[in-house]
Amino acid sequence: MSPPQLPTFGTIPILPHTFQIVLRLARPRTWTFAASSFILGYTLAGGTSLFQIGLGLAVAGLVTAATNVVNAYADRREDAVNQPSRVFWVDEIGTHGTLLSIIVLYTLAFAASLFLGPLFMLVLAAGVFNSIFYSIRPLRFKARPTLSLVSFSGAVGLAFLSGMSIVGPINLLNPVFLLVTYFMLTYGTVKNLPDYSGDKKAGTRTTATVFRSMGSAVRFSGILLFTPYLLLTAMIATGLLAPIYLADLGMAAILAMIVKTHTIGFFYAISFLLFTLVLASPTLVSIIVLLSAYLWTLLVSRVSMDSRVEKRDWEKPRRKTS
Image (cartoon, rainbow, N blue to C red; front, side, top):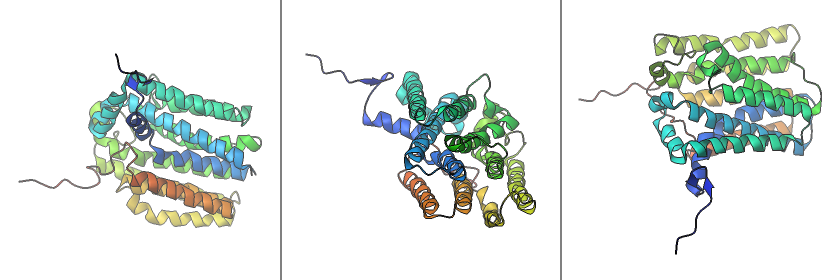
């Protein structure tokens, strides 16, 4: 008598460890970028429905999760040096399992978007296109330094616009939209720093590998990261933004630290988005959103539910061994 056959996920039996691998590849910590930007756009447009917020957050998380799995699938050469464990996890669920998880995540996102209107679905379609071709050939935006920054920041910008689209027309000239999108464009250079060695070895051109050394790439990122505060100051001086947004200048005080570790840089980036939300709408709801986002990222980090290794060689010199 043969044992009962388990249902399968791609070529892998559906077992708890399979979902754990997919969740790890989906990198839950990074979902806060799109989620925070969505709430910011929705709030500025005047939205108040908890149902719409819940669905929007779900879509933001699902699309970001799918993007991360696509990236893990497409970046085997780079990850063989940068994140070997990620290659192992992709192999564990197999090609079919990886592709099926991507399809399921995108399908769920579109299913949820049916309740948020046609304009939201249109923005979502643009976001999915950007999410797929950030890593996948033939476009592979991430291998084109300038386009990679536009694509990375565009993911957050589109999340902002998706929030606006639920309530009313999209305003591409909204100063907060322009500020947070440009901020994420500059932060995109920091994101490439931990992967310098693997990208260089694989011949992938990024905003970091175009420089001959890691030190030069770090200096470039450090300088570029100051420019959003110049834009912020100019917007306030010309009346595009209210003086209350001057409080965002306090974020510049920690710039000296964020190029030292990827984790600090991550918290710096989401903090800018969250603090901007509080300044745009100084309400109890905004405070709850801010605290919830921090709690989520801390809990995810606590259980190590992320496929990126935190301690990198570029963060700390190797000790010489005798």
